[in-house]
Image 1: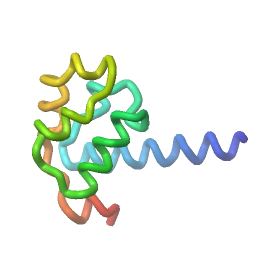
Image 2: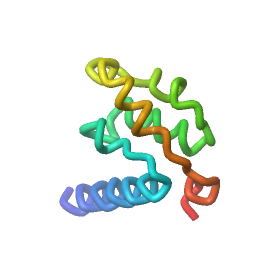
Image 3: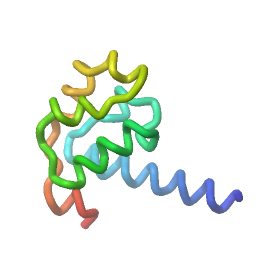
Image 4: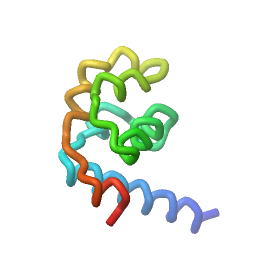
Length: 86
């Protein structure tokens, strides 16, 4: 169990570092970037989505109130190399 938690934390930190290198500041708005909404937005970024309006529509529940902040946070540029993890 401990190894699994450490592995998940390591992966979360790696994802965070990767998206911040593209100036995507999701963690400043989302408390859990690997939660339901965060995962959907990360998948959209990895798929090459650049429309912040579309990505902010992926917000669920309480995050819907944060759409303006989400749009600013998602406005970075994630290159193809970063999106696939190279």
